[in-house]
Length: 71
Image 1 (tube, rainbow, N blue to C red):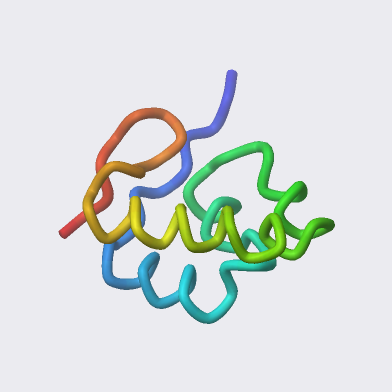
Image 2: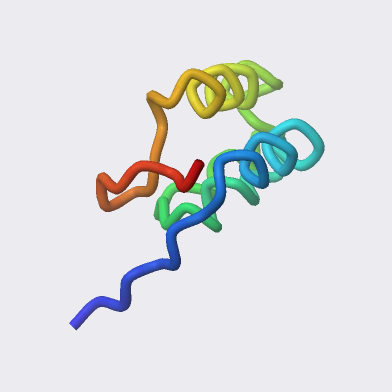
């Protein structure tokens, strides 16, 4: 039985992605299992971080299980 991550707030994820995006912390909090790849590559040299940041702002990136972020 897998434990469901708590649904995160969109504003919080935008701020965390902006300040700690290259560490992958926002992906960890949203339940993604590949967050460590961002940690060891510094957010794909900033490219993945920027893409995630834009996707969170536009609402295209939600929780790993498919739920949207809380508004």
